[in-house]
Image 1 (cartoon, one colour):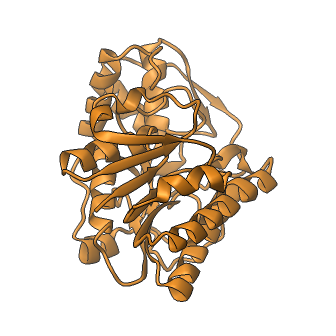
Image 2 (cartoon, one colour; image 1 turned 135 degrees about the vertical axis):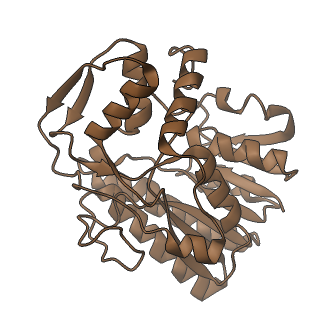
Length: 314
């Protein structure tokens, strides 16, 4: 099978590309012209790279030639700032994906695996852990856009027979994740410790999230590729949640430091808790997370210490 990884030069995409290459698959990466390919340096000799604008179907179309499976990891917005410009979110993510799906059908693509957001599509949870059939009431445009794409994937399966699997990810972390960002608490917090900077926390630190290691995320995608059944939706996470304050304590243990923390006014778009029920993925995909949180944080910390914070992937 030939794979196209949309957003393949990023944190998640580059780890997936490395795994696909190790498994002997032909891989094509699509990403922006100005995106660094530093994350792909270990696989560059074995992959094809197409650079272009996801909003421009004339850029995306050639990347779909001869492809069996599309892994859609591109998102032009983040949850926190997405509410400030929902029109941009829709135009770039939803409309861009619709154009890609039409072209994928025309070119005979067999399968799409889509990276959705288990942390935003459900909104404020009515129960924990959150199953896939929980009501979906996002508090941010990013989550609404993800849901819209999920629905269009189901529609394209109904109309055109395009197989798809939706993976609603919790909060992934690990090597190559940006340490200066408005999301990705573990990498951001570890980056602050490494640079001896103060950690900023929105709210009182009681907000909890479902953190899981990048290797477990990649294994979930690989399990999703052969999964049939038209269009399936799966939560992918650890199945447990950890508060930001608990996370700070773990980071202190791993790094042997006492991080300086500054608490700021809570953000309205932050749900108080997110913990995903991963039973369906265990039973139907045969997938389960394997890397404990403390071990994953330690791996990420060692990687950060070995790589300059000024590197292109920091």
